[in-house]
Length: 346
Image 1: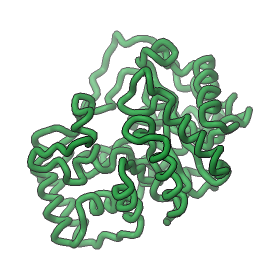
Image 2 (image 1 turned 180 degrees about the vertical axis):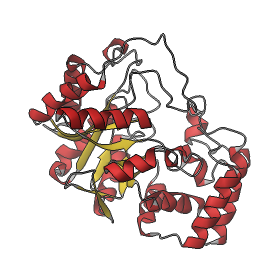
Image 3 (image 1 turned 135 degrees about the horizontal axis):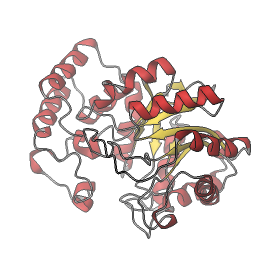
Image 4 (image 1 turned 60 degrees about the horizontal axis):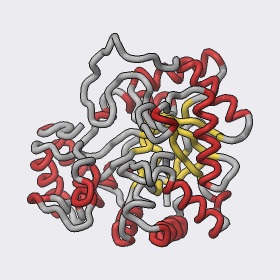
């Protein structure tokens, strides 16, 4: 397994991060334990979760994933060997704090203590804000449209000051953001530097062959400011595994079970790109999943690639991509396909 520094810290995290959002929905606790055991055996020391998981989010299952991870920590006695990341929901999830996910000190305290209890630990290595409070473009919204009538949101200074209290208490070690924009990340960094507040160490945004929007504005900030990307959806919810080609929907697949929730990657113009990438991978003796993940792994702004799986077969293939190096010719052909059909999904 390869490792990279988490932002400006001295913490080494595995290039492959175990994503856990299926745990408690598509995967039972027993299956989840098997995934975590195998991932650890393969050198993965980085797990990512969130208080809203399992996904798709439901009142009945929120917090379930953290509970499963906490039970694994208790059984395996490996808490100290894992860099643990979780996330606090933003506003809008009615069954979590009555939809008041706003990033106030009071709400952060409730969220942090809840995660600590479910995870059966007394500290969180990386605590992330799951999505912005303000009205901006994330979760599949391509373009920013300014809303002068948007509701009140906490200024970033107050959010960082609130988070600092929990860093000082030792409940969280470092902070990150998710589904963030160039303005938001830059502003967080500016305020932290000016006021000597905790500095963002990572960004968790989508990045895959069908959505390389991160290349445009965020990648330079990541490289220059040492705030690396934790790439989520590197297989575009499974579309870049190839299993949905030719309109196939396998039984018990994510789209088969929850297709109405996963709409971001259903764009018709993505089908040709998937077919072109599939052919390129096959020509080079790779599966589409292997080529897709290896490309994400190779980007200079990547800190860790968050993979997820519902079967052990998928998990083993995904983790194995840490050892795959794409040559210059393949990368050039990937970029050509991208140029001919850039970012077909949001």
